[in-house]
Length: 172
Image (cartoon, rainbow, N blue to C red; front, side, top):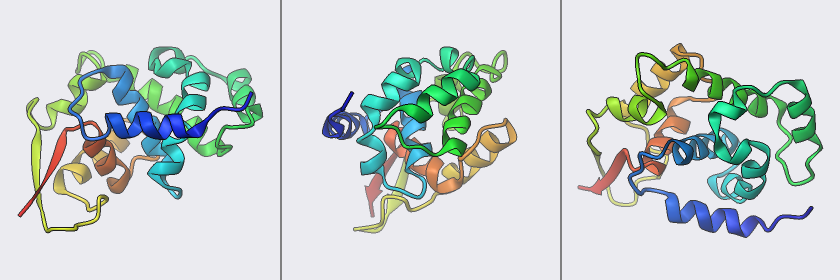
């Protein structure tokens, strides 16, 4: 089955930067963030249709139960980015999200607690690169790693927080 990758890119650009509290969307943004490492957001976002297919429509509760048969099936998908470490990281991250309870209600509650449920404004210089790191991105990345999340360095998490609208950039 051949998927039109441009649809994923368009979908992603419609989501990027808009404040969201939807767990499914937050997990989708995390998936794209993990896969963009070493590639680009455009390439990773272009794979949203195949990610939706192989990652149970971005239901992290289902993905947390994946094991070798699902992994092998993903590796056989022609349109899939075949990076076994990243694919396993998504499954691991799904399990880490579930382990956030009972401390947090859900993934949304966890991510937004760092800003007391408020948008965090990042003052930037004009034309600053999108992946410019912040103290918030670094703090969240460190906490996520401590909780067992994979492929969540400061730059990746910074882009996740920007994509989810948790961080909003404002030019100085």
